[in-house]
Image (cartoon, rainbow, N blue to C red; front, side, top):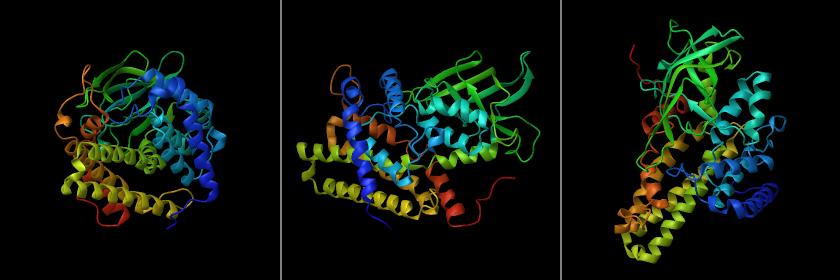
Length: 399
């Protein structure tokens, strides 16, 4: 395992740190530390402007090949970018889903025309995307999607006509487009066949949003109802009825460099907890001190596991060891939320004053309750580790 970065990488670290320090000021100074988990409704229009600002400076899509508008950074440098972005208090990225999920999917599976149409606006920070996978009866069992799409001649060409419902759709309120799974052959067996991967505009008749208000008071997620919504026939990625393969590719990209780089945000939270513990006397409690030490150790473990997976990465691809990342950080972060509330003591139960908004640590605690559920629950993560990393027999599925 390589525990040190090269001088070239450290030079890159200094470059991005200096740029962020200079540009997260002036009109964007108020965005520092805003828009993260539990704070998604933080000034959205200002964050849109920040996305465009990043795009003009080519600090979006840093891992994409240069031919598609990226910088072609190595996996190590991508992690450094995300570390320094978190260290500087960069705002939550509205473009994350397009940049981290759809973009790599189109580069791998999309047609030349799709790449030319959709990749540049993502790289410029101009178009925001959401993901239409989950449905009321298709969460972990993604192959059970029931939203349907049929080809219909609109008079000016063939279009997909879409009817159904998606749920837990992140960024749907602000997205311009959605990449989604639809059943295009309802008679196909087994059920993961007959599914297509479509790109659908959100601003149209036949698309109804119902934001889901979370415990933090924000609404990162929405229910989305499609009633005769339309998209062009050529907006299918990969083969018609072959969307399952493309969807699995998208899920693989979800475990990328930004996840490894998020540890710096965790460090910011732990530093704040330690500062409060010292100020209010909680650090004098030996049990609190032990829990802070355990949190620090857990964060170091995450750090060294990230370095190990980077060292083992072949051709930019993370190996099986990376599969433990999500379950470890999710469980660790959930406990950090509990520690934050215990360090705050009675102050954890009250707001500072009018307009009685939650503090950053209160939001973190509430949102971290979901860490072990979203993006694959801990139970699903254990299945992934056992089946894909360890090669154990698959969990029995109902016939």
